[in-house]
Length: 251
Image 1 (tube, rainbow, N blue to C red):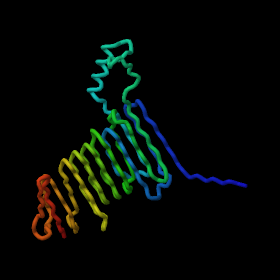
Image 2 (spheres, one colour):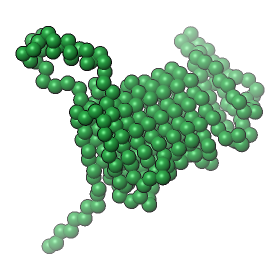
Image 3 (cartoon, rainbow, N blue to C red):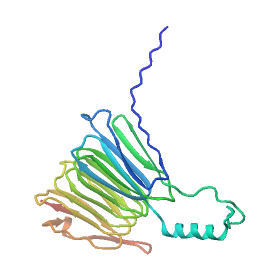
Image 4 (tube, rainbow, N blue to C red):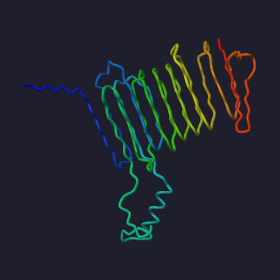
């Protein structure tokens, strides 16, 4: 009996530890097919640039924490024999940068699971690509020159996307959102959510669309010749919360 096992997989893994900066490329297994890039960074900033290249170029650099450096120097000065001054414990390691990249079935993933070391990542990708970019702490997301579907999530920082000719879904908890569209993909839903900050959207002048917008603490402005449904802002109020809701018809 013959057992035939065929596995078609391309896996490229780069583990980068204790390096201040550098760069590497990750090829797609099928550059002619649909491509996707996923970036997930726990602490730091991510910048993505759409280019004419057919692979993914990742540039990285660590951002040293001055407070941690001062604490390390203070510990070293207090105890030269290797013993820690923290309840008699000995320090055997500290936070270092780590970054991993892999490619499987035309999806490139760039991830860092380190919460203590801040890292800045710059990624150059094919401009016609779909992306999901996420960061959690102490950094911003910046995306430019992309035609495709882009999902951006930032928990503590700003989101900026310019030169977009596709679709952007963006959400942040603490920071501003700014999206500038060159073109829009017809019949595609767009979504933006912000809990503590502004949302600034720029669309092509000939836009025809329907918007649903809501704010709990703030105001809504439009530079388009928009019609508000029923010509009023709908307001609901109870002892616990107040919010304003409206629907705009443009075009």
